[in-house]
Amino acid sequence: MDSDEPLKLARERDVTPPGTDPAPAAGAAPDPPPATETARVAARPRRAACVCIAAGLLFGLLALWIARRGAAVPAVDTTIHSWALSHRGPDSVAVASAVRWGGVTTVVLPALIVIGAVTASARTLGGRLRSGLLLCLVASAGVYAEILINHGIDRRRPPVADWAGAASGAAFPSGHTTAATLFALSCASVIAARLPAGWPRRSVWAGAVAYAAVVGWSRVWLGVHWPADVAGGWLFSVAWCAGAVAVIGILRRPAGALRDRLRRTPA
Image (cartoon, rainbow, N blue to C red; front, side, top):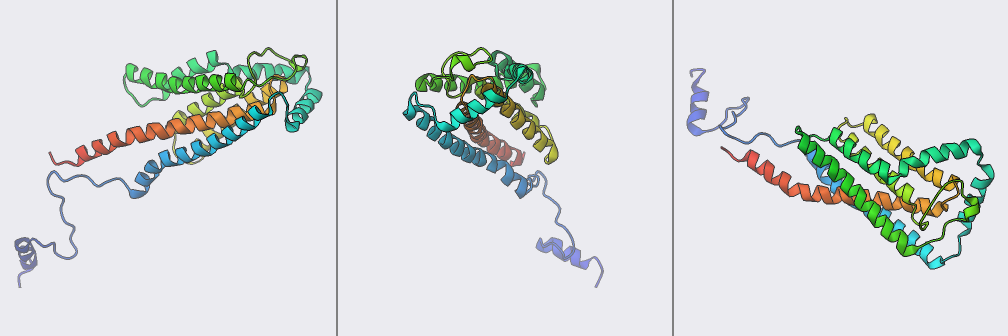
């Protein structure tokens, strides 16, 4: 039999001969992305929702515990507060006073607009500005929600005689700690998205944790907040940012799925 006979028979029967790869049809959709990457992207909103629920429950329990105690201060708060007062000195107070600027809303919220615009994937100036404004809007809404909770619980601060800096308003949760943590987590989320997986992203998130921790430490060290106020600021901010990631991921998913279907539709 002629050597080309199997190929001729295969074409007539529309069967692919053994050992050959079928040629893609004209206008056929490209191969879908790897299943592992698709699953990883799809799992992000679910993971964020789980973190939001866990942190939110812990914050709710802490807030309820603080609110039900009224003016009574828990022993753990007074113990840590007294230890901080007995160990702080002029140099450490100066450091804490400088660090607390990392939680001032008039500083961190405008900075989020710049960071969001710089790290945005949009090519136009308007698109970058919208990304920065969205990042600032999410954090600003979190700050506003914290202020409402703060006024609702209306916890007293430590005695004014213990203060080594200016403060105002109620104690729980700490406003500076909340603003600093919202800022740190928001920055980490947009910066890490532009970096490869592995140690670069882990380093960014570690820096965000350190930033929030240092600002929270400064509030206790200056004597203007109880430790539970700082813990409440951390928990609230984690819950808020994780919830925002989950909501944005869910809202973007239908648009992304529709876009993929349009790309795979033959012209």
